[in-house]
Length: 260
Length: 334
Image 1 (cartoon, each protein chain N blue to C red):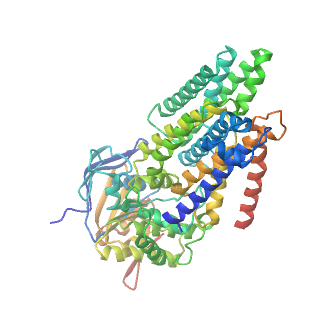
Image 2 (tube, one colour):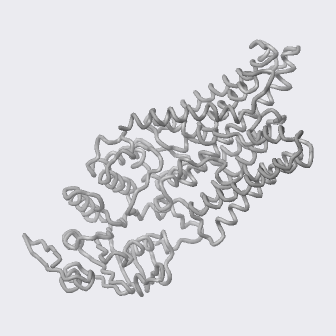
Image 3 (cartoon, rainbow over the protein chains, first blue to last red):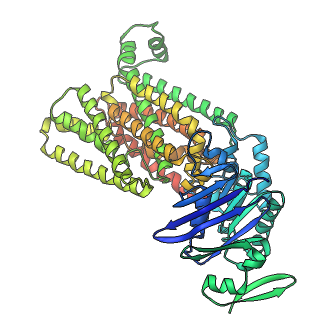
């Protein structure tokens, strides 16, 4: 059996004196799509940055494919890790003017050698990524002139250009209008169907139930629950998760959750 | 579109500008010199007063100005990446303040020029270490902490400089003021600065793409495989060293370090190119060098035989040019 793309053993993560998860045993296999759900401040983003290797865990083990985190020693370069694991941050920063194309091409960094410049192939990959997020024709625009939703889609395109196998997404739907929310979830679903694994911090349990076959619930105080969405994303669990009663509605085979 | 070929074309054009600026500097001055004299001086085939002046005075001064302009622009570009702040300049982290304290103390003691330079460099180095140590104290190497520490050390140095100026004897004040404003006149040996500029470019260029990522945020850079801490420390030390060498050579010349990277960035934007350090670093070095050579030539000719400190000229020219470009940029955005 192949090793999972992401796995944790007895993982403990704390932030600011608050426990995010305690003894988390978690396996994310190729082809799976995971939602991480929880209240504001439950530590969803903290957990995501920890398993991305951007932050050290407090205890336990994290592995991405065959990289043990945190990385140490030679031959375990952050660049090699970046070819496997992609991370979409909650916010994008552009202190300097830059074109949309250059910003997408940044995602090719882990694939390029020290003296390499982006090749025609890299530009083709970047162009295809822009197409996929509905930003074709934006290549020469200055990123500082983009709207919030356009900037978010550009960040998604950058991640696609990186071509990782494991996508770690922190609120991928921020700033997006409804049609683009669907489009972005669908493009990640296609990646999962192609053998990638997706882990996304989500706010809408309906979207999570629809697009993610697995879910990890963070209840705060270190308590967690992981499993198939159909079993984990339920009225009772969500009511406890958000501390507010929720009602499940069914329509055309989809489940939606609305606050009472 | 960023390609290596287009980058080379831009660099070649800027090399032409650099050569032209040096020729202008060599040909201008109170002793009239023709282009024949200039080439004669460079090839050693001519003799005469003009040739003596060019070889003995103008050439070292122009080369020193070029090296300092290049170093300052390079340091500015690096600082802007490090602090992810377009308003950062080489002096923001207190290096020039430290150098000024060192230089003025040596002048106050009436030491020789060499010792003034040594003292200035020691001051710059001390400031660099103090800021690094304090900002790094508890291992939280954040931009805000680094910036605040630098600004505090800089203003501390400013107070010491003011104190020295107050107690300094009248006769030494003029030299001190010229040093503070930046003056290429006392730069007799341009080679150390030129060497540092060349080595600095060679060392920083291989990391240029990593700097591009760093300019877009630590998390993004880290997620895309940059060893953020190592690169940031390297950038800090390089930028501080460049500044220290430039300031030791020609005093704290203002505005080049802030304005040149911006001018280059605005120029690149016109070519459909953003903040790409692979081109920005060498282009800034060449443009900064050329500009300072031209400014220094103006400084020693415009009210000849009186000489102006070149730092005053760079500021006088830099401020309106910068404001004009900023205004135009905003206009084109809307």
